Length: 312
Image (cartoon, rainbow, N blue to C red; front, side, top):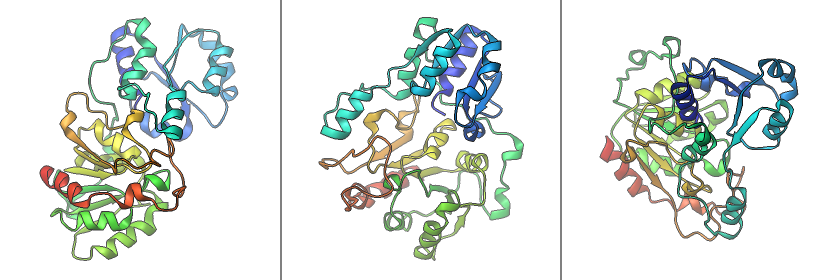
């Protein structure tokens, strides 16, 4: 998702033919992107497509992942290549010793350093997620109106990024709009628990019932997205949907906060500051390493309610 501004600017400013290589599971994010001429997918290894890639005789490889797999790819293709500064040492210092040496830049801006020598500059537009008619969900079927409901991202890849059900209940019971719950099948238990806590509210539970692109459609039509540090947060920023984000074990200083270069007022960040254990990871864990989960349990629900109600 966060690489799409670079892709767009390379295409528009260089008039280049752009191929994008990624894992097959990420294709729904890139489908119908008009700035990508070809999407190449792998399951695990670049060796799956290496013969095909060599036939293309690429002029340039732009590496926005900068890991062992992409280093291997660049070595085997032998083309001129550029990569972005991943700042692994700074991330280690922040997670291990709480010493912040991260650049005060969004990761999208850091990605653009990889194409600086090509003369490509950031156009300061949002990320791209291109929806089509087949991604639509019939809002009227669920008695919903565009921009008249709150979307809630129930899940996250790691449990330490997920908002506790109690926190969501304390917040949502004080906001007066229909509520749409979004997530995968693994989030159904938590969404059912939240519905039971909010029996007086009008709630549509879509967890496990929609694909990613349909969830993106609902995010685009929401008045606001209430979310943790999740993929749906980044999807919402593509459509300039206002975002109220709640941060657990991760921190915005890693540069992965909502990307809204023209509308920074479009999102709010809520976190428990001055915890000696936070951030404990740059991505997350399936349970709190300290067992207390204070980074979520001590969130200020009233402050979050105020952010939501300002938008509503």
